Length: 146
Image (cartoon, rainbow, N blue to C red; front, side, top):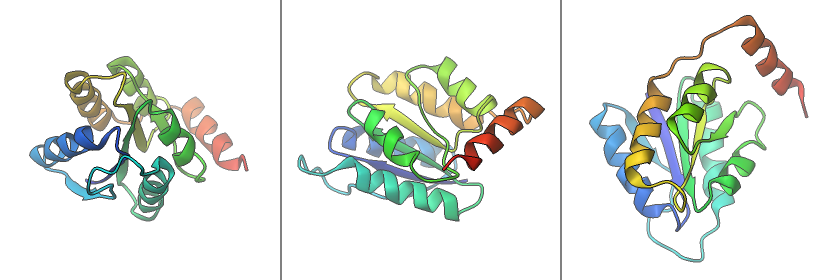
């Protein structure tokens, strides 16, 4: 699977670890930046780049990391068709995929340690969408908004 990743300075180190993890799992990783640590960078740029690629590359997913995860999830969800979720634990990761067919995972570098991030990422990637009628209906409702 193609997985687009992005992070601001707060998530820079974890983004690089994420890339290594994804490659070890056999995924194609496309790094949308930042490519060097820059304390003055702005998260919306990376969220937009990842969101656009996920929308244009059917079957791909995205992973975004910033300090709280909140900025990335807000920015990514501005794009129709993106269902970005912020996950602080594996329960949320499971539900975001199973119920909501999340296609972008957002993580908090300040609130989630690497070991927990790794578990979240692996579960999020391995959980299929359930395709229950009620979940499909709700996603269609989301797509009609805006």
